[in-house]
Image (cartoon, rainbow, N blue to C red):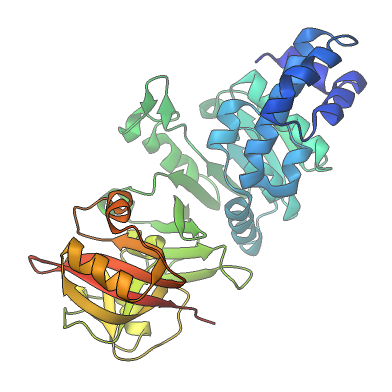
Length: 398
C-alpha cells in the first residue's frame, strides 16, 4: 500500500466509495467491484474494498470506531485493542501526564486513546504509509488537535519537554516473531532508557517476558481482556512499592473499569487436598506470579499441586481474579468412564480445560461426543504424577 492510496481514499470520491462498500460480504464483492469500476478507477475501487475488509476485521479491536478508521493489514494485526489502550491512557492521565511521546505509534490506536483521555500526543513511526493512516485516523475521530503524527526514526526523537514516553517496539520481522529483545526495533535496552528519560515511561513487551528480565526500577503489569492475556508493560516512575513490583490487570469483566491486583512478594501457598471449590486464576495473575495473593484473598486457599496454578478451598469467596468451579466428581483419567458419566448426566454443553495435562481438548471432545440438555466443565490436570479428571459446574460470581 502506498501513501497515494490513502490520500485517494480521503478525497470525496474515495469517501463515497467507502460508503458504498460498507457491509460488503465476500460473496458480494465481485459484483459490487464490477459495478463500481464503471464510474471509478479500478485501483481506487480495489482500495476501498480492501479497506472495508480491514474495517470488518478491526471491529473486534476498535468496535464502532473501525467504520470510520483506516488500516493497513499489519496495522490491524499489531494495533492495541481499544479496551487495553483506554486502560493505559487512564493510567497515564491519573499520573498527571498532559504531553506524551508515543514511539512506534503504528496506525494510532494508542494515540487515539491517549487523546481521548485529554493528553496531547506526538505519535512517531518511521513508515510513511503507517503515519498517513495514523493521521487519517486522528482526523476521522475528531482528535487531530491533540495528535501530531511525525514520520521519523524514534531513536532520533528528542523527548525532552514531554511528561511521559510510551514505546511499543516492533517484535516481528520479515521472518516472523523476534525472540531476542535486542533485535526488537528499537532494541529493548534503548526502549528501557527512553522510559527512564522522562518523568513517567511505559514500555510494551511480550507477555512471556521472564521476571528476571524486568528492571529493578520498573513496575511490570500484565493485562488480560476477556480472560486472554494481551500484553505486558514495564512502567517507570509510578512509585510502585518494593514489596509490590508486579500488577495484574483484568479488563472486559462484568464491572466497568477493570480490576488490578498488585504484589509479587508473597511465598507460594502450600499444596493441599482437593476441596469443594476449585479456582482458576486469570492468565494475567499467573503471568504476574500473583497466585499467592489470590490465595490470600480467598482466605487461605491451597494449591492443588505445587507446580500447577489451580487453587482449592471449602469456601466460596467471590473474586474477579479467578474463575470458580464447584467440583462434583473426581476420577482417574479414563475416557470411557468420563464418556459414560457425561451420558448419564445428559451433558451436551461441555467446556474442557487442561493444565499440566498432555491431552488436546478438541480431540477429547470428538471422543466424548457430548449430547443432552445439561452443561458441565471438565478440568484435566494432575496431582503429583497422577492425571485426574474433575467434573464441575462453573459458578457465576457477582
